[in-house]
Image 1 (spheres, rainbow, N blue to C red):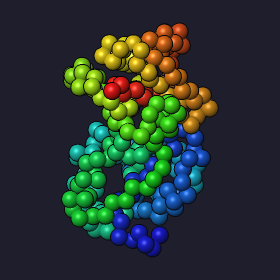
Image 2 (image 1 turned 180 degrees about the vertical axis):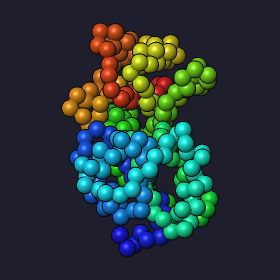
Image 3 (image 1 turned 120 degrees about the vertical axis):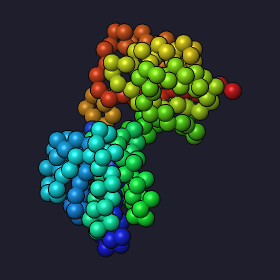
Length: 229
């Protein structure tokens, strides 16, 4: 780790399901830092126990990040090395972390994001939809701005990737079918890397019909074909 002594903040991707997806370098870094920041200390604590990593663990999530960013930057400026983990996947991708990264950069501190697990890449590849050009939209707004966001994507020609929750999936499929057409192709990926991983591909009409008969559970990535030229 000697070549990384100048780094103050590491972003550590954690498995999105299969614990075997943690990288050797991630384990090495987690064992070397002064403090590990976690979106949920219970979730990350279980992972650390599995990896036999014994380092101080501190909560850092969307509800406290504005309050704690300044203090964390001060600690890094004094020489502490921190690692940031989300519950699953790469920190700052539809997760807390952006504010801390920006503040550290603004303070002249070195930040290093390790490569590793993230949900949208396997979902995109598994979908069979074009992946030479794509746009990641993350979570749609729940209420205000949702309709406008969807309307703004009606002319998008690139493959689109969304994160969605199980109880909002049907609503989203219906709204997308109204905006993009019932015959537009899409793929619903759930429980990626886990035992019950499933990738269901079809038109919006077919997907709506399928999920009316098959209630869905688990984390979801929805990949949508772009508008044909």
